[in-house]
Length: 196
Image (cartoon, rainbow, N blue to C red; front, top):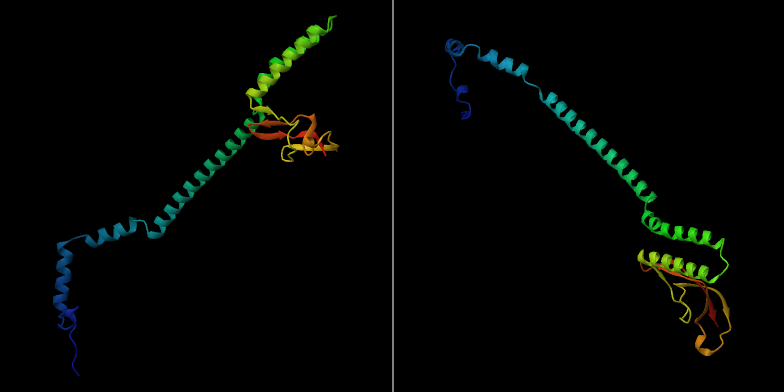
């Protein structure tokens, strides 16, 4: 049986003389003094892979905790801002209606000593128109129901009455309470009487 020569490690095929080996090792030690000591010292001072991973984990954990705290503060601040906005969402409308309230107070004082009713009626009409104009500016629009075909999406039928003529069947004859839109959305249905 033939033995294969080891091409990767030719030293196995060559006989080793122990004296030559000792000379080679002592020569390398004498030429580079302290090399092994330096390598050993570097290995002892260098952090191990476990220590590096622990340090990275601590940094990632710290970053996570800071991010979580920042998000929690953001959430609390947002909730508080929403609550404040809800408390003041009707502020513009109320501020604009304060002048109407002032007019009503002046009208009430003026009615105490009035003997003629005509100026009181005129003052109330002026205050009513002022109130309507403010509400129209804020997006309020009244429904026109009388004479229109009954629409259950916009109107609530209180009762049916016999129609005086054929044209008014299924149409609104009278309006008990006016309906309103706010920015084209129904905010109050009209309460109507429908002809049958």
